[in-house]
Image 1 (tube, rainbow, N blue to C red):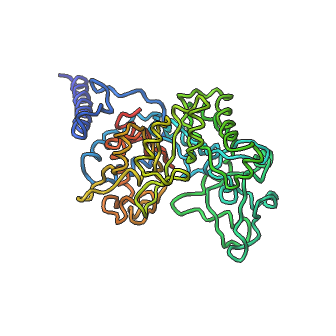
Image 2: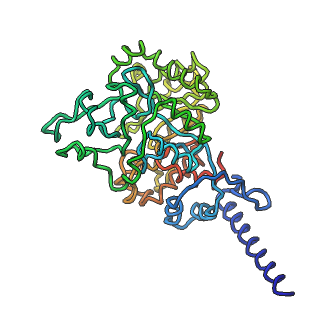
Length: 436
């Protein structure tokens, strides 16, 4: 056997061993789940997602075990867009939320769906902001002449001066479009408006502030279409309901304009998951628009009561009675927060909550929120709301352990998808587990 023949055989043996090792890890993890590899060890087509180093850092930091073995086998990709990975306000962990650069970053990280939270301007245009009145912490408004138009302008350090409140509804669309998006943060005690714009948490960054542009709802749809991703706009409740009534004529008209904007932009019903915490919005879309089939009812969770929050006028109902009513009214998709769907077993393992089991038993599809929105470097005990299912940090001791929670949500709760402030982390898992 000559040198070239020997080399070819050696290379073939290495490749064969590599694929065999990968297949073995997949089988060890879950014999019933289709692997990341196609039949005969052929990988799937790469759809050009760019994950960056974070998912690899997290996987490498996991404790030894079957889940880590499975995820380690996927480090060479391929990585591609998946609807399981939903860009929460884009890629808001490091990019200014609801900005063009944040949405593009999410799409590039493989988010198959990207979220625009929808609120409104004084002249009735729909724009992407998490709240009607968050401009003082998410844009540079207090350091511009438009500060004078705020419901409560910035006038100096808090609490010696009133806390500012700057609303999209304080501005016309033309005025709104002059603002620059920034990380959602503030320094209330600052003595200058420029200082007030600071306060970004040390596990986030201001590195991508400077060319981040605010967007209208229409612009976000067009950008999603350009980037090849689907939509999950959330119609936000108003801080000033009287302004909705004055500008649109009422909540129903507001919900209709939201749907009309999607229809006028050519959004197909199968490509959008409209959301609201306001059940009346969801029921309106079901009854009056073509966007009701995938309408998502968002549910908040009260950690002190270990139960979901049922809003008025339905708050007199028992939980199961309320869920039955939702089912009868045609609600198909429910989106509770992560702590509503998980709990710890007596042995300290992460398992589905009773509420998660109720939802699956009743046939609801489930989406949840929000991954990568907490600083997990010191574990769940210091991470706050999203990890309140593990308040002592028994299962989630470090940031890499977030994949334990994601694995239970995907494999046992069987969620359709999860919102993430850094979609790459979810895309890596979803691609590795061969999720759509």
